[in-house]
Length: 328
Image (cartoon, rainbow, N blue to C red):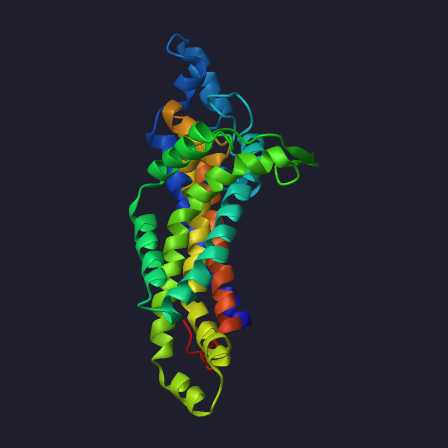
């Protein structure tokens, strides 16, 4: 187990160094931070002085080492657009994105898994077919279109939910949350549902397919032959083995929810990191773009590590293979 964790940590470190290199290259080839900060009318002396103060006159390896050292401490310099520290901007926006992604993930899991089990156990019935048709729509429709339709129905036509912003939030130390206010929950509903639709449909279809496959396996037939009830067979044996691939997909999709919430945040003007990134791209705000890239990569790496550890907890075959050194 320890060797497995150390191998995964080494792989994670290599991935983060590669991402840091890509993020650092943004500074070299996307825009000129000196021109962005001083404008076109600055003198050559001013440019040289600022370039020296930013360390841009140093050799490439020295600049990259300094970038990695600062990134480890969470420092990515000043935003070229807002003139504030990037770490402060990320700290302000991250709670909004994390709450949106977690709520969407909970909706996808709580609704998707039971519907997937139902569609597998009641295959052929009209309600199961309706569920599968709805899931196909959820996978096929673009996220921005779902968001616009929800705004049209619930905000414009019915007027029961707000269509933009985060609403009233409460500050707990350095963390701002909308979970503690009714207004915050009202503002969260439409973006969270919009963001969860694709993941919900994906989990539903995955659970159904895995459940059908497991129900055809020999050990399920053996369990039935032992006289176990349908409830024990379905939920005591089949569902547990169905969850291994579901854990993988759900873990990776949680990272995707955070990384690719850009469209949802843009449609609903949700003040999270996705909206910050879109604004940074429009202004070629390289420090913000680099910080966003590194943070998203770190989230994916951590989630992958947690998913691998959950494999060990759920699937006993991996523990046996890991103990004999057969697991890669």
